[in-house]
Image (tube, rainbow over all chains, first blue to last red; front, side, top):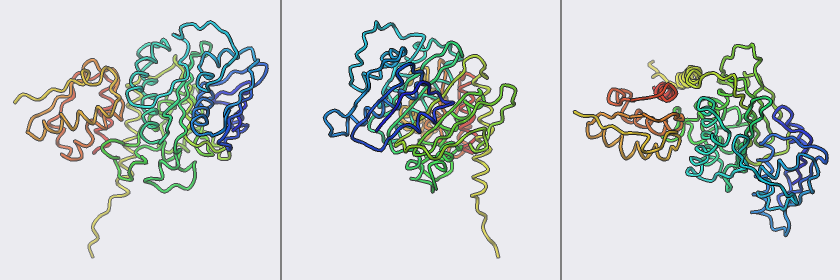
Length: 325
Length: 95
């Protein structure tokens, strides 16, 4: 595998970073980096860390991870976010580490429900958020990491990282796994024709990979990703989901736009790229602005309306009447 | 008859998101209480956030197996607007 950490890779331009990667060789991971400056979204770090964990555990090569010595002025960021620890590499950097509170959540591996509960408790003080700001972030992390733990089949759980950006008053967050991927997960209970088809189903209210039954099982309803996408849409945030060879990007609504939730993700303002290097697993990146949010309870009212309507419509389509002749 | 009150915060803390615990509450506490004819109060005091997954694991199977009228015997107490919003979503889509 080859990954080049570029000058810039955020959700808006992440496609170029992904296109430059090569995930085919499962024996080695070769990391190169821009020599002058690197500024990347936490999801990029999560992807590198997740690949590193996987390669270390599965490769029979003596030295499976090769990493160019970082020379860019911003190289310390990667050290502080814990990337080199995840890769078991010596960064060859000597820096004084400060308490991370108020700035970022370093790369964290979550492999079970107890670790998730602890993480959700710890993350808000780390990001110095007020309770009203914390609610959608807690919600999103809980639901997406839960999805990973329950459905992804990932040996290494979920890799999570987040960073607060003062200039834009935004939290940027990545949640990544190297499990089955969405297509295989959804295919357990639904017919899919492509990675895009599977991603769209996963983002649709009431569709879960665990059952084809409307309303889900006692344990799964197929709502987690739809809620996440909806929270992003109402708050006019960016949301990216990448699995297999497909990346779906929910674009920010214009500030002046009246947001209407849609059950079909293709009806939202979005871009799709279906010709990317194949990611075995699922990558989710989110940007959450902190200063212009709807109240979480109000946001739930919007979601309730569209969720209930969509599920009811689908139920009524499947309702069969007795035929009398 | 005095209803059985289940204090959620003492079982999951202020963020109700661990659906394994939600399922355990349903199987060990809610369902047996309803089966023996008791009403149930789910007390959400001090709970600041609940995920849809948690709420689904907590009550969806109760609604499915007992029927929607079981909601006459379950009360949701001391809910914040956010917790209430989640309960309403799950109750809505289970009908």
